[in-house]
Amino acid sequence: MLHKNITAFPENFLWGASTSAYQVEGASLEDGKGPSCQDVKEIPKGTSDLRVCADQYHRYKEDIALMAEMGFKTYRFSVSWSRILPDGTGAVNPKGIAYYNRLIDECLKYGIEPLVTMFHFDMPASLDRRGSWSNRESVDWFVNFAKILFENYGDRVKYWLTINEQNMLTLFGPTIGTLMIPEGTKNVLKETYQQNHHMLVAQAKAMALCHEMLPEAKIGPAPNISLVYPATCKPKDILAAQNFNALRNWLYLDMAVYGRYNDLVWAYLKEHDALPQFAEEDEEILKSGHPDFIGFNYYNSTTCQWSDSFEALKDSSSPLDVAGMFEGAKNPYLPVTEFNWEIDPDGFRATIREVYSRYHLPMVITENGLGAYDKLTEDGKVHDPYRIDFLRRHIEQMRLAIEDGCDMMGYCPWSAVDLISTHEGMVKRYGFIYVDRDEFNLKTLDRYRKDSFYWYKKVIASNGKDLDNCFT
Ligand code: BG6
Picture 1 (tube, rainbow, N blue to C red):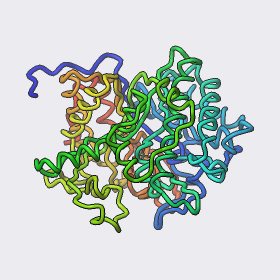
Picture 2 (spheres, rainbow, N blue to C red; picture 1 turned 180 degrees about the vertical axis):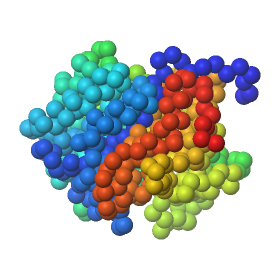
Picture 3 (cartoon, rainbow, N blue to C red; picture 1 turned 135 degrees about the vertical axis):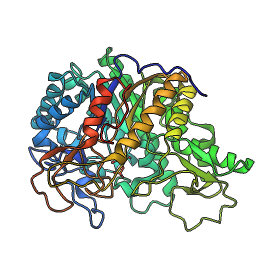
Picture 4 (cartoon, helix red, strand yellow; picture 1 turned 45 degrees about the horizontal axis):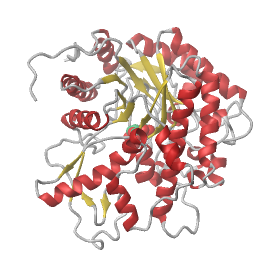
């Protein structure tokens, strides 16, 4: 749809950016913090460990001041479960509670709304030893953690996100370093979707608890949603795209919003003897957790084609290939980043439209961004026109999606500050704020404003009207 008149972004639109605890904080075992699965995993070869990261634990004041200088209305960060509860359950770590009090208060000092993710890829290591999400008790562990967060921060935090990218945890867990499949498991698919089921139940309970304890607060899920395209208009490719969309996207949002399993996913799990086991109360719990909004991460679209037999991809370990469902395909129309991620701003608009037409809830973009090898010049500058271009084109499409009738409440690109990538190290930078360190050399850890910092400041000041790159 073409629009002649483009209206402004809504008033009170939440402009900001995101980070996650295990990627930005550092201080990984300091002040009583217990190890998380990220602290004990095997670090991908050639990349930094997660002991220092961007050292936000010690430099949060400087970081928040820089975010305030950009004009942030919100900062999306996650709380490290094992900083609050070193063993995941049991004794609370007062220094952990105090850290997030300081962080929240620092945000509020500048009028920045904290948007708090409760779980971002960092299961406490001691809970992994107890079976992680495979253990039915994980539901209670998570709800207990949620309760502690609501009790301690609910007086100041109005916006909550439950589980970051539960769909990526389920589909790509080993790459992220999170999927814990108990030894000797015969049907890995069944185990994976049982874990997924426990996360869904835990999320529903946490949303219901939030509404009960904090009637003024708003809570929503934060999956990674991107529309899956068929590789061609062959009818079979359309069926493949529906399969992948269901497995990648709609399973998570159908459950969060409607409290029921997506039919295609259910049929797929049944076919593979992988249906999750329901506890007696699950059906009711799943129906009881209603999100107030949908948060979702978008980096790129996905393309797939029909998969012709159960056998064809027997040896494939890629989650982009699911025999009898779909095979991943390259989209010839899209350029890629330095890290080979496809760039698709139109797909962003299409995804927003699709999510809104299915669920009709306000949406906040919880991640979107470009990872690149940024370089600090001798005079302390970082010229990142590629990032400005990427973000500008996505914001333009988001504005068009609003014009199309979609209800958008905020935009938080990844990431506020440079941090460690999930598996590609420190060299893959996303931030508006450059952090002076290399993969293995911690250097000064000083902060520098990138060109995109000044550009985003201008975008926010104009409430999204002025998207021109002032550096060209
Ligand atoms: C999202 C995650 O999947 O993508 C972040 O929520 C992650 O934790 C981001 O860092 C970018 O991915 P990567 O692999 O480039 O770090």
